[in-house]
Image (cartoon, rainbow, N blue to C red; front, side):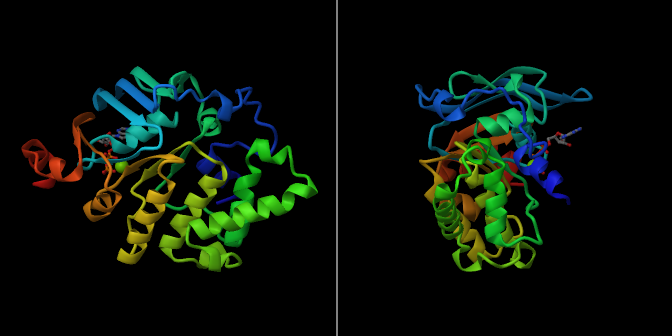
Length: 278
Ligand SMILES: Nc1ncnc2c1ncn2[C@@H]1O[C@H](COP(=O)(O)OP(=O)(O)OP(=O)(O)O)[C@@H](O)[C@H]1O
Ligand SMILES: [Mg+2]
């Protein structure tokens, strides 16, 4: 994959030039006055008449760590596609904070407003070191590239080093990303997203293919990110969801079947029927 393709896939950024977003500075504009960072209302998405999402409603609080579960085909990934602007809903409303209408923005604009998405397959620069991957991710941030003065370099290096430590790769800074383990690559991609300082992180099956040890470390990482960031995590791994410990939303046939803590959800007869009892 070329640098350009990676940039487009991870950050929704087309090239290194000014993107002409014409979009206001996200940090000052995200209105969290009602403590809700993401609000989906009656979102419907149809593919050839089939409703992948069917009047889906979801509200995520600022700083929340929400898990989304549901059987294959429930609409979990489609929901993320709607939030990130990859798929346009047929109807319904999607708001980031109180005022940013996501259905009116392009994918790059949505990435720029502070929504980062991690895909299942890590999208990293294999031939570059872990450190350089984070450096490249930072450079796609227009606010940073405008201020690349020598005096800031140390600060930026420190930030990259701190992020490497945060994602458990402090001792792998110089290692080519292609030589990292599957789990480490996943963490590196999360680190790349973090360099963009997203307020909302969407993570689709982040621990798929990880070892048990990597899964535990990923749960610790997510717990450390919650609060400062809001996270929406789609996963099938129930032990991982249990570790995260937050509210769980069950999707089924494109709608919310129920919400609650994992134990409540797992004991619900409807959930057992559609999902856990399969
Ligand atoms: N681009 C598309 N064209 C046609 N149908 C699609 C498209 N994308 C998704 N679907 C269908 O929409 C439904 C929901 O798919 P989605 O990928 O959102 O499910 P999911 O909950 O993420 O499932 P999984 O747990 O397997 O990842 C599925 O029936 C899928 O086949
Ligand atoms: Mg999916």
